[in-house]
Image 1 (tube, rainbow, N blue to C red):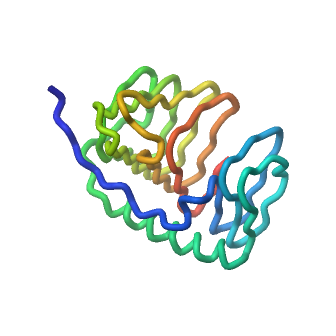
Image 2: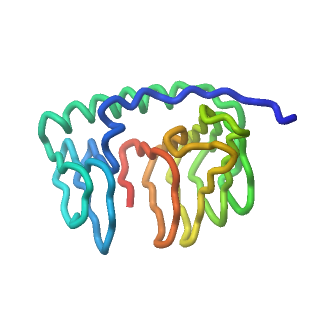
Amino acid sequence: MPMLALAQAPTLGSAADFALFSTAGAVTNSGISQVTGNVGSNNGSSTGFGNVNGGMHDMDGVSALCAADVLIAYNQLNGTIPTGNLAPLLGNGVTLTAGVYAVSGAATLGGTLTLDGLNNPNAVFIFQIQGSLSAGAGTRVMLTNGALACNVFWKVEGLVSVASGSVMRGTIIANNAAIE
């Protein structure tokens, strides 16, 4: 039987209602996208969104509260002690169970990364990436055996780039950089 590693999900507060949010600048969309959840910025404007199933909040009271809640979640994720270290190349058929995973620099996600909840709907996956994160075209984060996207967190210390045709799962919090 695999050993279980326990991680605790951060408190998202009002940020849980947002699909896309920036505390440091604009949120821009290009192409055709379907967004479910609020979109906004506490320090810029949101443009290029045609189909949003949620509210648009730029530099208003809702975005100010969200910015405070994002900072709390970031600090919680940043303060979590890693249960394992990963190489900078993530995915490519690897399966991980719940835990807190650290990457000491920039990371690239390619192929398929499977997150196995081991039939525990409370399984939490935290990725602490100490640089940028780039997801290649066609990359897939797959959830199996009860793993839930609401329990997957990516704390990234740089730019997050997700290529066309990729399927990401979870909440991405990028510190001091953009999400493309």
